[in-house]
Structures are given as structure tokens and as C-alpha cells.
Length: 197
Image 1 (tube, helix red, strand yellow):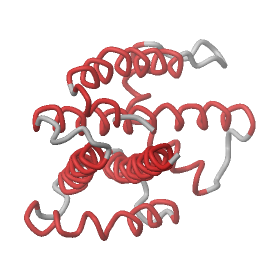
Image 2: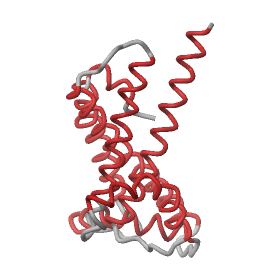
Image 3: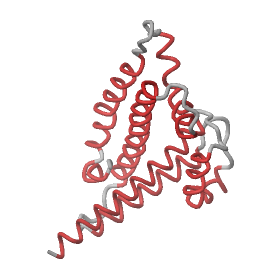
Image 4: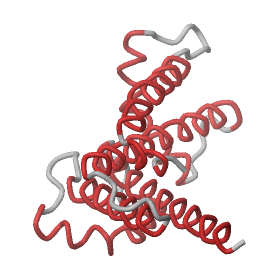
């Protein structure tokens, strides 16, 4: 019973850490897509993640261009430390450093793909239900997915009222998730068990 409670606790801790990685990557992608910084949702994401990111901003400096390296580094370090601590507590001993690093990269890639996956679903629903929505959440979703949708739309223009680009992006996300994240997760060994939500 005690060991079951312990493993349930570790699972909960891993899930909470993965949710925080999700928020860090949302911050990273909002910056990369140049989404509205003053949007209340953007502000909330920055507020929640800033305490963890601040120390990394000290030596990695402020955001340069589109890519916030401090946020990426924060996510990597938090996940790596979490993998090491959880595996130690679970009795697996010290995981190989390469496995921990690969597992952390896989977790970051997994979070990015999940954000785009959910944002695309929301975008598709909004396009049917409220195409002219001005809610801060709706605007943010549009700003977030536009950088990945625009190049696809150039190749596959809308057919009248039907936009096929989201289907192509969904397929791409599934392929990247299956091939890249899947390969990284397997290469991470035992650390790979802690990759996804």
C-alpha cells in the first residue's frame, strides 16, 4: 500500500512538473510567434513562469529576437532535475546523464507539440463557432498558430470556404510526435518514462 501511495505521489509530481514545462513552452512559443505581450493570458503565463526563468535571464540575458533561450534553459534544467530526483526516490538509482538530457529534450518537444495540437483544435472550433471572436484567448490562439499555418497556406491555399492547412499541420504534428519524440523517448531509456503528461 505504501509503495503504491509513493508511486502515485511521484506520478503526481511528474505530472505537475510536466504542466509547468507546458507553461514554460507556452511562454517560449508566445514570444517566438510575437503574440500580444499585454494580452491578459500572456501576462498570466509570464507571471507564473517568471520566478523560475529569472535566474537564467541573469546569465543568458534578455530575449534576443524571437527566441527566449532563458525559458528554454529553465524548462530543460527543471525537467532534468525532476527526472534525476524522481528516479532516485523511485529506487532506480542515478539515471545516465545522456538519458536525462535526451529525456528533457523529449519532454520539451512533447510540450511544444501538445500546445500546437490543442491550439489548432481551439482555432478550428473558433472558426466554426465564432470566426470574428475578439476574446483575448481567441486572439492569442490565432497569433500562436499563425507562424506554423502561414507557410502551409502558401503551399495549400484554401479551397473556397474550406481550409485544408490545419489537417496538414495535424498530420505533421503526429509524424513529429511519433518519429522524433518517440525516438528520443526510447533513446532516453528509463528517463523516457517521465517524458509526457
